[in-house]
Amino acid sequence: MDIKKIIYRCLLGIAAIVLVVMCVRSVLTPIHFEEKRAARELDVIKNLVDIRTAQNEFKIENGRYAADLDSLIIFLKTTPKKEVFKQGSLTEKQLEAGMTEQKAVKIMEQACLKARIKEKIEDPDALYEFVWNNDKTVIQNGLQGFRRDTLRANMIQSLYKGQYTEETIDRIIYIPYTDSQKFEIEVNNDYTTSQGIRVPVMEVRAHYDTYLGDLNDQERVNLIDKETKLEHYPGLKIGDIYAPNNNAGNWE
Image (cartoon, rainbow, N blue to C red; front, side):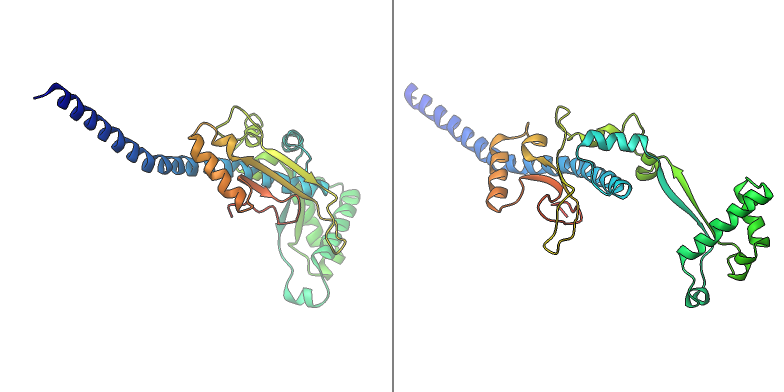
């Protein structure tokens, strides 16, 4: 057989193999990209949700959002969380008679204060037992067994139920799959609605270029271009700096 024909056939064979490989890669590359993207976004979303939890608690305590993530971490580490211990409840008859939770709490506070001063009772359980059985106002209003105590709990343990400690809570402000890059944050604590109502707003986000930065460049560029054309943020975020949305995530 002519050597030229052999070489020609070999080259055709190699070209065919290359084409097959290219076709397979063109099909598998987007699939692999989307699989990795989906897996990574679960971790990014978890951190965003944890930040949202912290910011909502910060707002409850301070009436505003933390302007930066470092301040948010300091808040979590240094501020105890207020938790109300509840025992007993008001009956329908008491509510119909005009008794409210606020009134009942005030009556109990005054009764406990009086008993603490006069009877020198310091133990909380003993104090309530004495008040329930001896205070005329408490008895007249049928508040025996009614108790409300404001307790101070560890903020991190209370919010995250053992997921983090003071040593590990910092990780929530870093975007997974990056070299310790922090989430972007914007806050406007003076946002005013068209009705003139002040509503603090915030936005925390992670661009595709951060947590997908080491994946296929072309697939990432295509994804960013697609979301940009749809006027969507090209990445994951919670909240909206331009309009209150209850800090919803753009994946929700």
